[in-house]
Image (cartoon, rainbow, N blue to C red):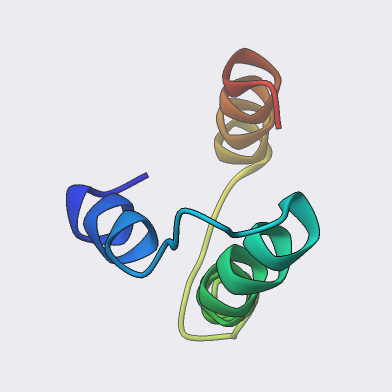
Length: 68
């Protein structure tokens, strides 16, 4: 997570915040960002990019190593 996101998430927390409220607050920040990132990954399938089978294996290896 980027430092800006951590700062933004912690700066709006209140001392009386319930776990459910915290989840909602953080989800409202993270989900739109995740959707943007997923769309960017989807752009890689466009015909403007070319890749070989070995490149796909590298991406797959990264995904396994990063725990995604």
